[in-house]
Image 1: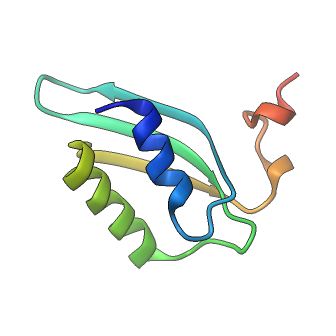
Image 2: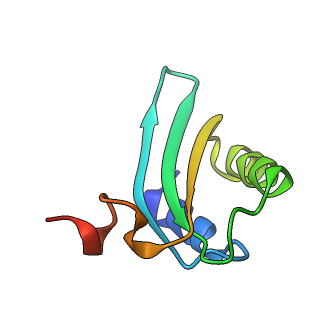
Amino acid sequence: MAPPKVRGFLERLTGIESVHDLHIWPMSTTETALTAHLLMPSGHPGGPFMAEAAHELHHDFGIGHTTLQIEIRADACALAPDNVV
């Protein structure tokens, strides 16, 4: 599993303007975790979108524990690259 490929997958999801604060790490020898902030100006996509994204991350990249944070404004997160001081 390569972080650039995972980032590319997330950036291609419908409604995603950008991805930041992406972290992927092993939780154990058999489980991988991911956290990411997704900028979606059109608003939160709902449960089915989140479930499908988690399913595809597991199927395509072996990531079994996914946490996605949805942001609707670029300035809403202090961790976004343009907002870090």
